[in-house]
Image (cartoon, rainbow, N blue to C red; front, top):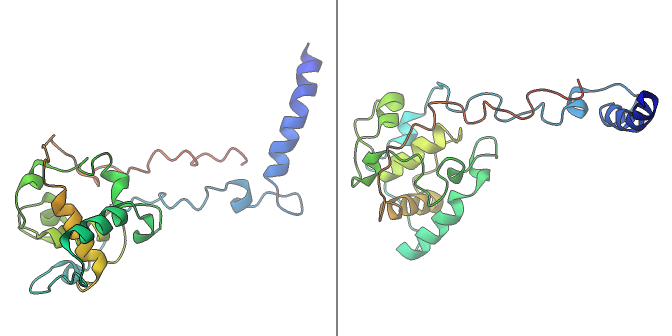
Length: 194
């Protein structure tokens, strides 16, 4: 019985070892663990120096590029799911704000902009933020990307979509998306081929 089981396991062991070795039969880090270059290995919400002047709106105006509010909201809905906007290209707004787009929103999200946002206060020293500044904070912190240009249609669209989400928003307590690293439970942390 033991011999039969071992004979059955031999091809499986060979395939695992073959899949984990480089061209000369030795395992390389990238080949042995395809998840070695894990974009979530570091917490994108960890303290980093923020380009606060790029985040602050001040007297900068949004540019609709001739699009109607309806068109901006539709474009914003598409951009909300676009992971290419993040620094590592793997996180979108919808990664945290799942479902109807308001998951993880704190009760203050129901208030008209500008309003107080804890992340804005904690990370950028801002007592209140505009909707565009909220988008910029999310770009810079959880998305780990450069803030968008205030003249870009992308920022105008994401801002319009964010404001549209306030309609019908029912506060559920929310949470801080940077309170814990959403990537901490990395399924690739342990290298099965190591």
